[in-house]
Picture 1: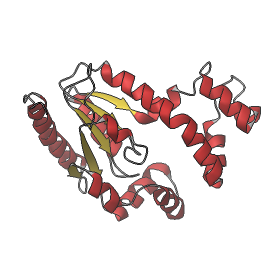
Picture 2: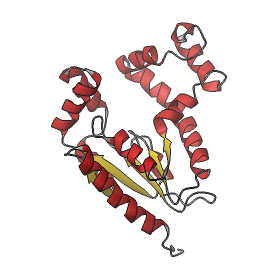
Picture 3: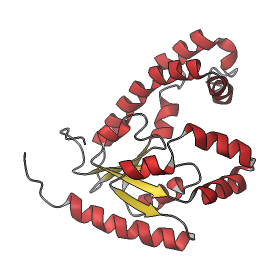
Length: 211
């Protein structure tokens, strides 16, 4: 749990496995006026042209991993590190501290009653240390597979391979403070998100006891 000064009174870490509906839930919170910092967006920010990380990555993997305009060929890098755990660890060691720093800076600028850090790897990367509570958007694994297959046109084998690189459903459930079960349609998810929004709004305006 974070208790830094110059930050919202409550920061929620929102996470979920592939196909869980994490992105949809995040968008609903945004429509309710909640500031959201997206870890995936921050991961792109730290490797933009002109950023030191981009030069380090190009020096490590080679200039062929850059597009002609000088931007990172993310698909090529993803393919490379997915096939080589050692390279994946090297890249994560480089980027995770930079992403976390960028996230912390953005959270400090939030002006909403509470803020959300949306991250698919919230606990795996230690980003949950920046939050006060962890909200899991949960779904049965069979639904994760089917939703991702329909959304991305991926084979069940490809989706299963991605899921294998993430924490299991039970691991995410064990780490969560709050859970929204997304096993129905969009209207059901909206209802559950709105209820959680009301709870977080009330919690963020409740004076905290000092330790």
